Image (tube, rainbow, N blue to C red; front, side):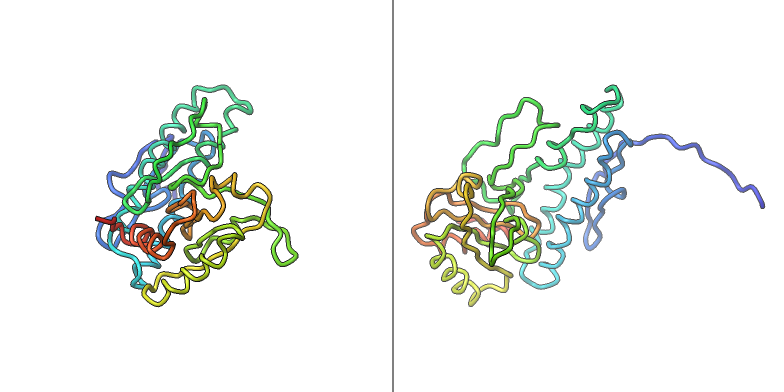
Length: 251
């Protein structure tokens, strides 16, 4: 055995100045390093990949514009900085449940970027955003979990997300949503499907009135929401997809 050298480990808390340049993107520890406190580094890194992969697929598939890839840094950068700062602050807290209960930062972060269409509603006001998680379907937030029995099997509404954009509405809006998706498929290559949810408390969880509609991204975050039934759902969804996939907003 030949001794080569050694290095003393020391905690680091840094965030990259940029998360991407040209065809190269950083994620996980390449983009941000946290202290071990809270075990937040892996959660943050997985969420980076979750945010980026569908955008890369969109670019390679020809249905995502350049602003979609630009939104990766705009969305994940603030979350990374919050995560890194939190990992440092937790070093001063005593060991115990309070230091481990971090639902707010793990689940409650929200995205603000050119590919999110705000609906004019305010974010929840929390006493402790680090630890409190309140599920809302406000654009930019993680789409809420609601139990739902479909085709005889009990699952979650969030099981519908992952490989396409998803249009969600209630039973009263089922035909309109299905028709709008079919019409848009003739003009867009964006992967898109619709579901009519018939579950107790679903509209309340998503902030919708009868016939209201939500557009959810492949990563499970809400891209657009119309609390009331849109007068022209095809046009409304077309405008929402222009924002969500291209960052192009109506004049």
